[in-house]
Length: 197
Image (tube, rainbow, N blue to C red; front, side, top):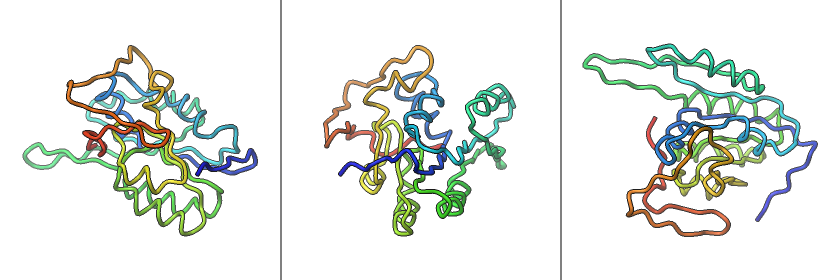
């Protein structure tokens, strides 16, 4: 069932930057066009807030990236990568993003989640239970099948990947991936879970 996106709807967009970055790099060898994603997801509605959750690296070369996001009207929340004894690294924004979604939900009509991470399924179910419309935009080839099912709307950027990528986008395949259609969305059976951050 298709949802109706009214122009007067107030929407918030929460961007799992690492998830989109790794999906675009692994699937297409390209970078993400966040401006195109924002425009497609908002669809002319009233954008209350757009937040990108970003992990800062040891190189600290993200300044131009943050400036580009800010010029699009996307605020950034940053977190340093944690390096443990022995060299193991850990970084994710899942809890922070989920808390912001719960806080913003009463102030908007719809939450747009830019991620394919299946860890967000309970969040989507909760937001819907509370009466908030939840939409997901991501590369369907690397998205959780369950996340696709529970969202009120799912925009599969893999259907027109060049629209959402910067640089020399090319589809990568190991020759064994089979795709099939379910509804209007493509699903890759071998890549239903998103890459780890």
